[in-house]
Length: 218
Image: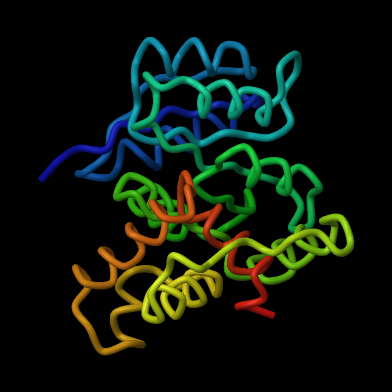
């Protein structure tokens, strides 16, 4: 069993401690360092190369979104996944986080089991958008797009890949997509991966945005 190395970036010492204790209690996870601001978070990630970063959006100096952009733009860090933590469900920073390449986001007061699930999903190359905010946040995000703007070109996708893209847009995991389509999880994962390549999407969160913009999810 591989161990997921998790870094934490939050300006509140108590929050960092709580997350560290949660991570240390899991057999398949270990802490990979802590940072109290965005600049320190970027330096930590470059030094430690964690699998997953839990990133608060509001921090002094460089905020979490700016830090996320630097991490996402660095090819040497392409294997590090960032899960954004936010205080409010409709926090406007969430829109920027999705654009910047977040693997997903969670509300800070989420159930610890949901947070651990998010870490494991991110490490596995999937993403998690809090169930309570997936539709409302992404719908608001796409509604802010310029009126009359071009829809994403889905011409290269097969019919099955379009169907899978729509299910990703609903926030389903590979396992849930497999159950819905009565296929194996490996087959579902392959369809998702092919859609990402064809649509030049960095991760599943960006696939969700594309699905909404293409009108596959309402």
